[in-house]
Image (cartoon, rainbow, N blue to C red; front, side):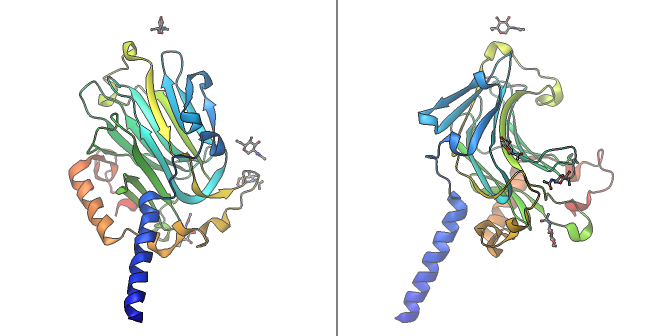
Length: 288
Ligand SMILES: *[C@@H]1O[C@H](CO)[C@@H](O)[C@H](O)[C@H]1NC(C)=O
Ligand SMILES: *[C@@H]1O[C@H](CO)[C@@H](O)[C@H](O)[C@H]1NC(C)=O
Ligand SMILES: *[C@@H]1O[C@H](CO)[C@@H](O)[C@H](O)[C@H]1NC(C)=O
Ligand SMILES: *[C@@H]1O[C@H](CO)[C@@H](O)[C@H](O)[C@H]1NC(C)=O
């Protein structure tokens, strides 16, 4: 009886802790102002639903963007995003973490718009010490313009994982033991809507301004991150396992998510710098 109860408790606990990853502490009730502020194109930013949702717009005069008030040294960062529909060629919606300065670290989600009827590409990138060029691109298994979906970045000392609706699409491991760079600087959370010449069809398809204004919507403004005062460089405490995203469970993918990741890699990845022998005659170290 006692041991059955223990097993029951254990299962309950597993279920609950799994729920933490599935939902993060995501709370779509948190208002934008609590953790974020407008950083660019203020007259192109619309607050909806009592500040629980934000719409960025872009027209031929400006794009727009927002960022977190705080910087973070680790965390599981969530955002619900709905990207511009219709003809979005040349339009990029970005959700990313970045530190300041030339030698910055950065973790990117970039939604590359497309002509009407053509699917978006989701590009991810990892910068360490100002060095990026680690692009991967994926098709999505849904229409990201039709509804909100959840995009997440886990960042602890062991791995960085990009998730789409809780499915891992990219894993960047800490391989500093073989000399590969790994993000270490405190980063702020940013989002923006902008016009990028290169984004669609290798730059051959330009933005069609007759479809402007372009609109991207965001919600879910709670943050599960380790706060680093921007007046200090001390982010040592951010690797503490007092923060749940640093615990052993989050050091690698579990077998179920590992299988999902392999499936996405085979079925949905359309570009991988690791396999681009024209750019990289030798496989980059972190890809081995
Ligand atoms: C921008 O768009 C507006 C409205 O469509 C148009 O009247 C204006 O001429 C455009 N400006 C430029 C510089 O293209
Ligand atoms: C990467 O992992 C090593 C241990 O292998 C650790 O000492 C280091 O702090 C980690 N780097 C970052 C930036 O978290
Ligand atoms: C910290 O960042 C906030 C928001 O970006 C800024 O207003 C404030 O001046 C910064 N504080 C310091 C000490 O740099
Ligand atoms: C933080 O580090 C940067 C570069 O390492 C340095 O220039 C800056 O003075 C440091 N700031 C503080 C408050 O220690």
